[in-house]
Image (cartoon, rainbow, N blue to C red; front, top):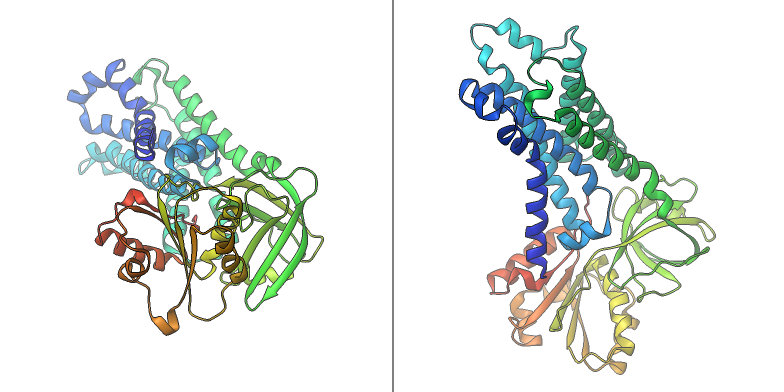
Amino acid sequence: MNNKIKKNLGWTVLLLVSFIPAFLWFFIGNGKIQLFTDPVHSLGQIFGLVGMTMFALTFVLSMRLRFIEDVFGGLDKVYAVHGILGGTSLMMILFHPIFLVLNFFPNQINIAMKYLLPSSNWPVNFGLIALLGMILLIFITLFTKIKYNKWKFSHEFLGLVFIFAAIHIFLVRGSVSIDNIFPGYYLYATIVSVIGIGAFVYSLFLRKKKSLVYVIESINEKGDCFDIYMTPKVKPLLYKSGQFIFARFYSRGLPREAHPFSIASKSNSNKLNIAVKKLGDFTKEIGKISVGDEVLIEGPYGRFNSGKGKDQIWIAAGIGITPFIGMAADLENSDSKNKIDLYYISRSRDFIKEEIFSEIPRKNKSFRFIKWESDIKGRISAEDIKKISGKLDDKEFFICGPEKFKEDFISKLVESGIKPEEIHWEEFELR
């Protein structure tokens, strides 16, 4: 099954599950009757139930489960789905109180306000708290630039928001929640609540227990980049070059949250290598790590190194070279006949681990290493690559680098006739 079919199937399953309460309400509950007698109120009911189901599914997507990653083609793609589903869930939940009170306008505004403002009715208050909390936390995610550790801490409160929403759907009284919305309403609400809370608890507390303990063996600092080697304390990580991990450093002065890093070592190497450039809030503090410090490693994740057997073009900009280091090292003993051209783009003449890429063509004639000094040659274009590597429409492209660079270059490739499914990249801004 190809990736596009799997992704479409994944979306289909998510949407079908999300709309289960709508199907139950319409086909076996009172939906048919209420649809004609009180359509606005009925829509309010169904928006709330569907929104709550989608909310629970966002926690499932956050569990970083391998089979879900396989379906959507990588963890970065799963988080994109997570974001879309979360935003849709918020809209559904926003429509829930709006449609419930529309019938009270304009003649019975006092009754409407009981649904929309805090009062002595605590079952309704729990719903209001959940709604306002969700709006605030999603606003922080989409429209603020707070530090990653503070954002991650704030994002964890979504679990508490979900619990308030679950309390609301069990305690609220009246036709909104009586069991005859559809037979088994409270059973369904229980299942959704258990799934959402269970997935949240797993992500926050239990997933960390699956991490492997590594110890920092050496640190090589060159300019603003740190080359870090780690060895397993007990059990080594099994991975494929080009994948990435979440690393949680237990070093004095560093926050304890996990951050994603591309693996820079060849497949299943006992020594795990990452290259870290001082770019963000966390990586600017990476110099505080020391030899002997422990690191919790979670992973591996990603489907970056997943070619289809065609000739390939690798394009790396700056620190985006890291996944290609291990992928290139794997080629030393490879018998593949596919031709691979690596374009390494840097503004300066400081090319990380240039010696590795220069050595490999001596052992594997199918690999070529092309340095591109952008401050001398200018920005690389699809036409530049075509002049060196020949026609492009029979090749696969693997791109890693700053987000703006990736977006611009992918657009250029598509404009030049390359099919999007032949272009591979991963997002590391997982917010």
